[in-house]
Length: 239
Image (cartoon, rainbow, N blue to C red; front, top):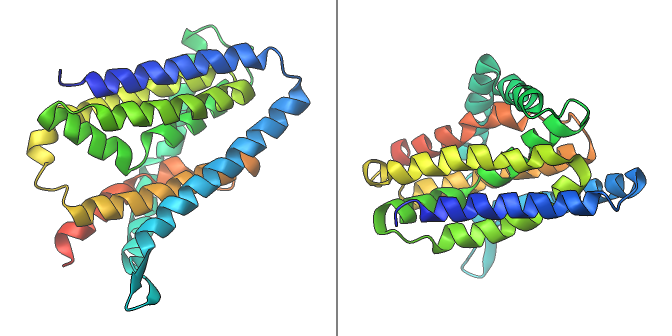
């Protein structure tokens, strides 16, 4: 069944979020704060690992790095576009709208939880590759694995931020669902080089989210999201 992978992923996020909310009731604010920083530390290393995996390689017995020019251009151009569009404020407005519509006015961490969780589970090559596999061959295994990982992440984040994290399932459903539906048309574009660039830039964005969990307001990862598109274009233009 085409689209089953995204449905499984969304279900896992909701299940993880609900589990986190039950755990939240047992935690005092001091423990919630520590848990949030611990989550941020883990997210930082997830982002670092993904970045270094794409940048570093062993050639002739020596460690080499690559992708520097692509990375700089992607983030410079992508961040400029993101700031002009101001994607960050759009995410925040969506979070505030959801907060109002769900009667969560008393949940102080709702918007932050929604934005941070959404960026953490929506960015990365795993989402793109899995959605393409689902759309072309009906192979949902990659998205099911991603769903299991997302469930753990959202569970911990929900215990710190609250119910806003559950709604990170919405952008996952929209983004991955759209890629699944468009899998055939975009298949020629998503070359190995494009996926590698996407993974590198996506991992760096995940790193930024992790930093924000510990040092609030350091980055605006949502405004950097267009860098992912620039990275894919770079792979198609630069040999």
